[in-house]
Amino acid sequence: MALLSSTWHTLPTEIKLAIVDNLDLNATRVFSRVDAQTYKICVPSIFKSVGIGSLVLLQRFLENVPRTYCHYIQELDLCTRPGSNDEQSVHHHPRAASDAVFSILIASSRLKRLALRMAGSLDKNVITPFTYLQELKILTITNCSEEAHSPLSERLVVSIAATTPSLEQLFLDRITRSKLHAPELESVYPYVPLVLGDDDIPDHHILGSELSLPSLLRIPTLKKLTIRDTHLGDSRWTTVPVACRLEVLDLGSCYHETEEFNGLCTERIMAAVGPTVNEFSLTTSVSDTVFATPAVTPLPRLRKLHTSPFFPVESVVDTMSNLAGSPIESLSMQCYEDDVVDVCSALEDFLSLRVERGPDFYKKLARIDVSVAENNQSISDNEMEERLEATKRLQEFCRDLRLSSAVGKAASESCSFLQGSSPLGSSRSNSNSFLDSGDRPLVYLPRRASTL
Image 1 (cartoon, rainbow, N blue to C red):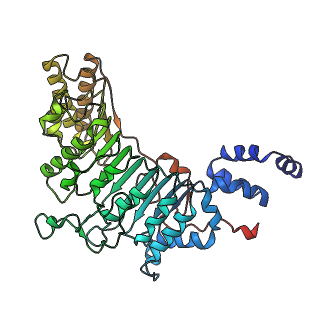
Image 2: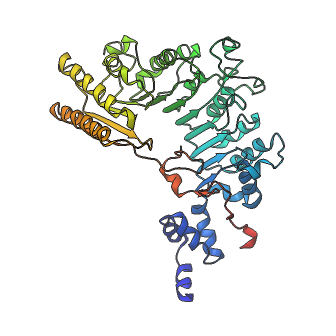
Image 3: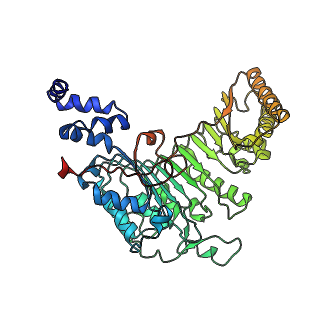
């Protein structure tokens, strides 16, 4: 052992770092216990990807981990919810969450990917650190609390996004409109939650006081925008000067509004950013025929089209007809197990229409896929046979038309400690998480530098 240790310590630092980089997180943790010098070599890998699942755990992290270690964090999945039942009984100052988030972000200057799950809005001071996150390109902001009781202000979110210098990908979920930007929604049906008291968020140096959701299109570096479970009825989507060149657009719907209203909102945003978009994900149908003509369609570069499991199956043919003006090469539909037969049938109807319309109708189309999300319900043998027969007919039809096709279970992403797919992607499975599988705080905390 002494000989092996001696040999290890004679290696150049660059070689040691390369060796550690090839270890998974568990192996790195074990290897770090060899001695103090090895632990120092392993610290950058141990802290490269970090997950902190509650406000209490965040405070413990800040109390026990040397602040200099935050410099090594490149991926951070952070939640400000209270945590487990025993943690909720702990008294917190109203600004505790904001101060804790500020402290870890201001120390994590090398962040490249950040998932920030807020339990409602935080204080405006959390905006400041984003000015210094020069390498942050992928940002997720989600409200993990009930919107009616703890709304997350659009003004805070837009200011954070606009303050991030190199932001390329933005994922937003359950963001609440501000009364300052949506006074027309107050005291009218249907009820849409509004944020009050967010007028203290300072003006942005470029956007000024206009911190409504449409102002996201003024972020010049933005390439991918996803907005889910958020009201998109702001009329400024059609008038805001677009400074970004979006390549991917993924829009969900607002459960407070009707399907028709959500569809109109989606079409309005599509028309605003369409000229540069090559990949689009739909939750609602498209009824505007302006998208059907190649010469005038707002989506002249759209090549990949996805639909969510919530897309109305009965609208498949009409929506595809209305998007015929785009050079779509790939169509991917997600559905639940119960909808497999209906989805396959709808796609057959679309393909029959393609044959009927002739070679110029979807002439670029090369692939159709169906991803099936499991709902863990038992089904009879007859139902299973019916589904298999439906998928077989669809794939045979695709083969006859020389189209590639796959029907199968949706690939499940790595689950994070928040019991959902991680917005940081599959790399999160190798992160330094401070929750175990039972959603309880782990005992493990990295040792202080003074113990080395």
